[in-house]
Length: 127
Image (cartoon, rainbow, N blue to C red; front, side):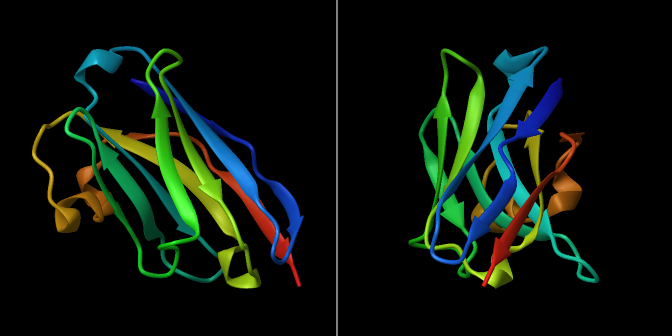
């Protein structure tokens, strides 16, 4: 399984950006895809995750109501729509996946549970 993240860039505070994560390979076995981010000097943190089918979704409190994770099954692509961006959202964003059906919000929020990772894409929010 390979993941390819894209869509990062420079945006002003209050603006929006959509990240994409193209999933290829044995995608039929992928049930959970998530986004994580890492700001300079900080540990990687969970952003959002979604499970298919039975579309369970959860978000970090810091992005709830502003970010939306979604999937285009026909394209095997997962999106992260980010609205009302602020300087604290500046980070390298990475998508990740795992192939188990087991899902709880706590389990999906732990990066150690994800064996498949894409490269990161930089998001910079200017204030």
